[in-house]
Length: 174
Image 1 (cartoon, rainbow, N blue to C red):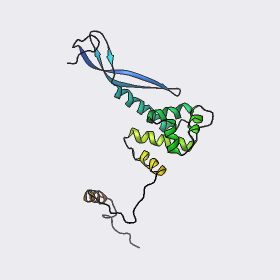
Image 2 (cartoon, one colour):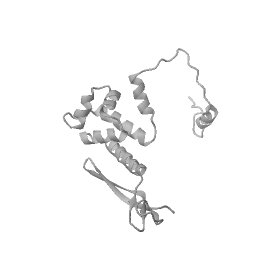
Image 3 (cartoon, rainbow, N blue to C red):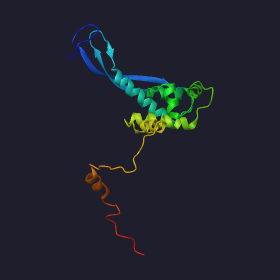
Image 4 (cartoon, rainbow, N blue to C red):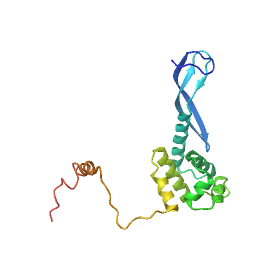
């Protein structure tokens, strides 16, 4: 049994708490796991659960394509990227990000598309999109001859020969 941080009693239970977040004129709700002390009623929600909820909200905003300064700022901060960092990835002056976020300028649809793609990639724990943008800023040399090792080549070959693939269908007759 867990001990309560406030009253030091061993009366802590696992509960689900309704939580909501107001973002860009929309209210998002969910249930998050938490602990509650049966004696003093203190409720504790772990920071990781709050961050997961925030990432999920960011993913929904990204999928909706909200093209407002507030949405753009929320997506950027959910990624944990500074204005200068995002400007560097987009190859624009840092002021542009500030102008978009404060609605001095309409949000550039291409910048929003890149930012939304990065948010969705982070939600799915795929960092390759961010790596690709970083490589564009500082390309690396690629040798004239490159040897690749296909360690899982046999497993992937089996997937290619599944039922219905061209390997199992009869050839077209002319």
